[in-house]
Amino acid sequence: MKSMSEAAVRQYRELGYYAPVPALTRAEAEALRHRLEAFEADGNGMSGAVRHKPHLLFTWLNDLIRHSGILDAVQDIIGPDILCWGTSFFIKEGRNPSYVSWHQDSTYWGLEPPDIVTAWVAFTDSTAANGAMRVIPGTHKLDQVPHHDTFAVDNLLSRGQEIMVDVDERKAVMLELAAGEMSLHHVRLIHGSDPNPSDDRRIGFAIRYIPTYVRQAAGSHDSATLVRGEDRHHNFEHEQRPDADMSEAALAYHAAVTGTHAAILMRGTGRAMRA
Picture (tube, rainbow, N blue to C red):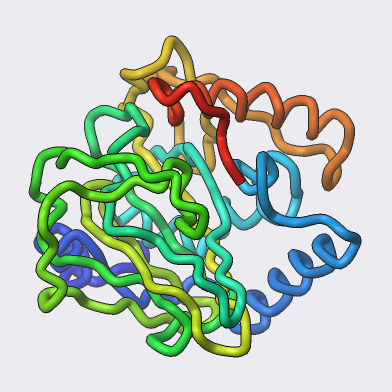
């Protein structure tokens, strides 16, 4: 064990999640929020294609996916050879109807076997007051459950997908986090979150980590970033670091990679990746 206690790992195995996990200091989280909002202040938004795999566009996010405070805990769950398969922001503005429907992450990812963990890193406090994530404990032991696509405007998921089984919300557990903390959850765990009725925004950064033996079964090829250990399986093309934030080279490479990613995630819809 590098970071997690045996009891914490046991809870993850039994319930499909563990939180809170110390990852960053509050000062580090505030600095990351400042970097994000400095980018937004220039008239940009962390939406559209930029929202997907932004670690290929920003050096500070590429550093974050390699942060020892995150990886030490992830290693205790999936082992020492780790790829980052994807990243995305989940930003809920204050007094905004945006939400995340009940779903399993694994629905359209095409990754097998489902030994995948999401590290959800809080850039701001994430609480009951601003729409923190809720999970249904133990549902990671289910097989893949059918979903249907809604493409609802206020749903933050790429296809607005919703699970097609009844969810007993009385069993839901809210994962409240302070800025700098993270939650870890299994790719099959049913989870979602409500809108943010507070005056401040809620910012989370989701990092999808996989052991190197996982493979892409829904596409002809895929890519990921080796962040720790050794890749002896070579199931994914290794991604390159951005040379500078939003550089021409980084933008061109990101466009190529996310185009391939979108073809996998949006297969069968006839639609492009949405904001």
